[in-house]
Image (cartoon, rainbow, N blue to C red; front, top):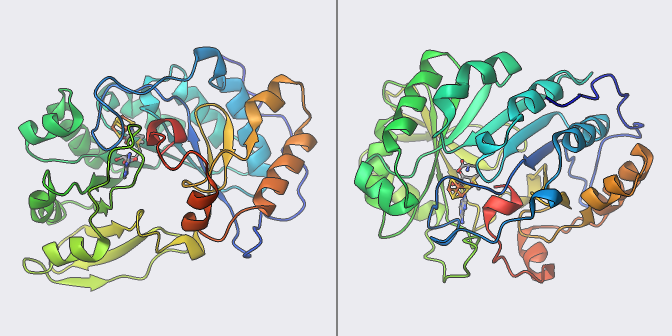
Length: 339
Ligand code: SAM
Ligand code: SF4
């Protein structure tokens, strides 16, 4: 059990975080680990990725301290991700600790669902209001081909239990040409009697192996849905990266995330801390500040604020510019960046 710095005062406030384009940044995605119990083809090779050394992953106390600093800078929403976040011991305590910050931020979770059954009640008690569940196939054999591991039944059970418990649920499906795009209409079918949102995600070049990307665009994904379903565009919440649609006669809705086309950059409010404690102002960009090194060198909260504000001040206009600027060339896995 680790000690939480809940009563530590947040970092000095000097207005919200704004980048040179005037976008407010109030959403932080935190990769609590790069370890994973699946091997999704679009995310990592079958042998897995080169893991960050254990001592180089942020401790829970360090994450809690950073959470307090970012909340002080106006971050209102934290997403706990990874790797598979439920593999990280103490993650539920971290979530509870972030929720107890004076600004009571939203704390959300993205998970592959394999370990959800054992953790759902604790997550709810810790204050998680909504879960994003990754599920790329409704067919157990196809799911196995994509994830290279077993456990499809556990993910389906987790989906039902989240709904039974009345928590918010988004199902994320990465559309992989030649592998699962034929299942898109079945995924839309999930929203008929279930109050959930299915989001179809364009695959992005973060497979950790540098394989050529088999791309499919949001428009092509919609074209696969429209013959079978009547869609009506919905107004998007501010800063949302998905284009949302109501499906005639369905309780739930669907969304398309054009992560590869990068059509949403103009309103993107997201920041990331990767599994090494690197601070990133764009998914496609390189780490801007090594927060882990700063913390371990004994920096003050004020030092952190200055470093974060200065990185935000260098934020580029979109993911195309950030990718060009990044010497990594997009080969890193989303599991270490924090997808
Ligand atoms: N392991 C958890 C999971 O799968 O939900 C959390 C981490 S995972 C990196 C977060 C999200 O990133 C998942 O929805 C996953 O499908 C997505 N993702 C990973 N690699 C991707 C890629 N190359 N293109 C598009 N989405 C990707
Ligand atoms: Fe693991 Fe999530 Fe990457 Fe799949 S997408 S390999 S579950 S981190």
